[in-house]
Length: 461
Image 1 (cartoon, rainbow, N blue to C red):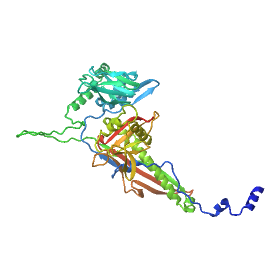
Image 2: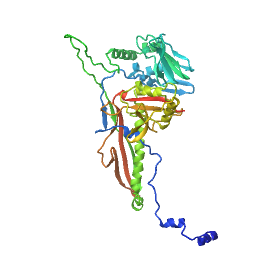
Image 3: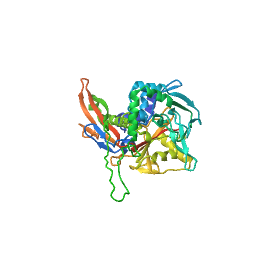
Image 4: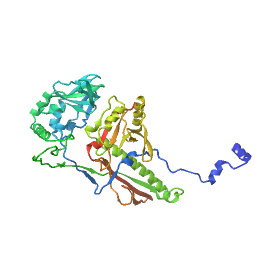
């Protein structure tokens, strides 16, 4: 104490500690680390809907199914989930759980090393192969007899679906494991043994073959019969455009919270910043972050879970190479932008730099962003990175006019603060706490399957 008094007595001017008691500090508004650019919410065109539901009508498509199959693992043993067999097109819609369980139990597990043969071109197609883990490369004979890469299969994919038809024929390609793989196989003999014991499965397969015999275009849609290049007066074919009988309907999802502010804080501590407004601002930021996360990851309408199997691309070697980006870009017309985690964008740049390629940045909504072939690559930290250090790259065509991906919301809500977001006063409790209900309603719709694609399981290391 004596030293403090002596220092004060020897000081020739007012100290800063004492001066702060009479000064008004310069301060920032409350900061929040969780705020991201939210490029997806800014890039999606938003459609205002009424009634909370949006129906997407499409032409009738026969080639449904053919999706990603999930498995369960118990130690080193892997089993297919019986209901997941419905992702094979021939079994789509067949819901007899007992028969599906019988089929699932007849699969045999095989652990393969890199380079092992899975199936060989020209040999009889005699098994359905499910890839539980690993990557398999497909190759076939080119025009002049050389080997041509036909694509890559990975976790959840399958091959040999022709085994479930009357004429399985031979393998049109060779499939070889490029990494360590775990595959499950069902022999044609085991499949027929189950079919012979199940009248319901026989009837289902008969209906599948009849649908497959109907005329289709290359997208699997019911064909429109036309005549072109004719002369004279031939009889022109009659036709009609068939629609899906039960089209997909998207219901608006929501994110909500109740914001509570004590009246004493709202009354006495509102200068120089309005406490209630700052609380609302940060709450709305958190809701918007959750909204973008749901649009990417929600299992019902999220983009990652609504990619058509034919629009899924697997990397050739693991990292996201320029060749993989070209393959993803080529799957659709008018790709408006790519969406990737910032670490994935860094991995893409590393692969380009290794090949002495330096894609330019492009101007997007007033900002300079990375691009590939002139298409912006927008960062999105909501795309997950798995425990195996892998992630995904999404490619989107957007807008109703281009049959693309759109965001859904409803405007005109009571006490609307932003489009599709409302802040409603809920009253004051007996403890003098003011409550506000903060709600936002949203969803996303893919108008046609080719509007959305994904490069899956790219390695970031």
